[in-house]
Amino acid sequence: MPGSPRGPQLDTPACILLIDDDAPTLRALSASLSPLFTVQRARSFREGAAWLRSERVWRAVITDLDLGDEHGRTGIDLLELARFEAPVALRVLISASCPELLEPAELVFSKPWPPDLPQRILAAMARKSTGERRD
Image 1 (cartoon, rainbow, N blue to C red):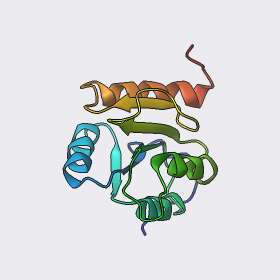
Image 2: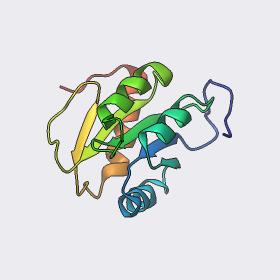
Image 3: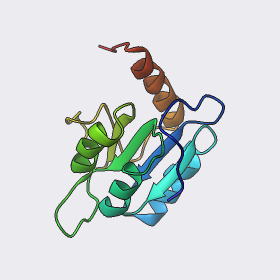
């Protein structure tokens, strides 16, 4: 998989890993985020985990809760992996069935996601990078 050395990438758009097993949802979400971010899509837990372990510097990992994984792994499991493989990445959960915040997610959005999702993610990434907490 293509990648870059771990470290700041100030001259390029932030890289976001987007995981959803539903192809139309994945395309729509990617289209809404791509004007502001470089988006890498994955359609399964396994594919998402492989991208997390790549050398790419992820600024956000956005996943659906239910990934249809044959081993029962969920988006929560993927975000837990992201906590270690991509510690600077904002961890975001998007799901039709999970309206409240669940660890290790830092943000949760329900489907359909809000039209200003890209701006909310950008703001949350900025807060995380400066250590600012939003109460």
